[in-house]
Length: 543
Image 1 (cartoon, rainbow, N blue to C red):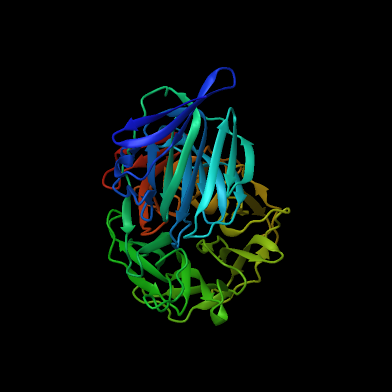
Image 2: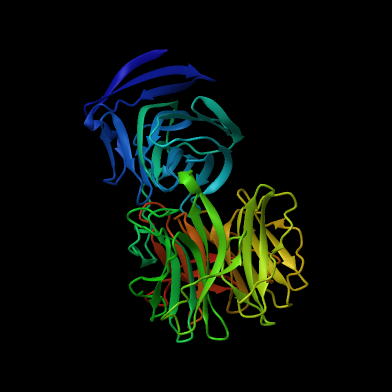
């Protein structure tokens, strides 16, 4: 074994080398963060990253903050560090990055408040989940993590305990870290592995902005999420969304009634949007709104509500799903919401069926399990049927069901699971449903929309914000089409007057905002358009 000191720009790093395997030489680098010049060894391009107080500090509250060790690149490698995350309303994630060949392409482990998730990512699909394991992670507490890649296997440790060992091939590349929805502090950083040459020069990928903000701050705490959009009778677009100070916003001194339902109007096909207004604000956390223009001219907004647990206990209780309507084009809304289902929640809009009934996808979670469901109204939303649960086949479908009517009159439902997503069909008007089957790809909060040409679009979260489309009434689906790299999603779509599609979705994290993009769907694929002109920017084909 050989040892020595390397001096780089005033930064002292202890480097040890050892022969391993069939003559390969490993290098061990212990990063000394006591010198302010230590930051010179990291590529960031972002003033939200710094070295201070012997720590690498990454401010990922607004958007993820990433840094990469400039040299050397590694093949087989072990990356370890101690870290703590500052408490926030988000997922409070720290990422350990391996094999970065550019700023968007790598293998990484996402340590958030509940799980450690091994992923691969690139510019098209930034979140390709390989394996996850549950783990505790307290904010404002130091934890240790270690990620090892040897050959085609990756091992992940948290607080010195092995979480998993899984096959996951990767390319040689830089190592690094990121913070998301928190400020992360890292120390005791050690890298050990085989130095390797990159196949091409490492570069930072700059994302081309082809989206706009629908709303960046509705005045409730600068956290906007869970949007939905529809066209009104007068031709305007109405976007509704949750406004609070975090993912869940219970009442506090700054927001005495908790999170609320807000909205914005567009009179120019989504190019610009009005100042936000308050659509509904009950005494607790009102959230996940969806909006529909009914054939009788009313606008219906559905949502669900969370209430703090009594006596100051940690957490919250669900009060179920509700509906409010407007009979004057959205100028005024009912002040007293009507209950749809006490034990069920909603994250999708009312769908008006060809027989005049209203259908609404629901979900429930209790001690017996979790499943999707559908409820119906034959009197315009005044009353609702007992929800029809969708058989799960033994899997958990934790949240978010959407429904679309097919041309043959059958109803198709898409459901979210934690590690999977599924679908079910009813051929008797929703009285009974087939046992849910897997799509074969992940998805959270699917949104189903029939585009011109009878192309059925299904947008969803995971990976990041994505969509699939079907040309045969939901029998088969296209490959994944990336929409945006942000991970909030909860998308919604509306057809514009020229036949193109507007998709709205949210960013997630501190300061989360509502975004919108425009595209055209054809049998040949998805063509992205700017919101200002009809000129295409990129295409994703069905092949």
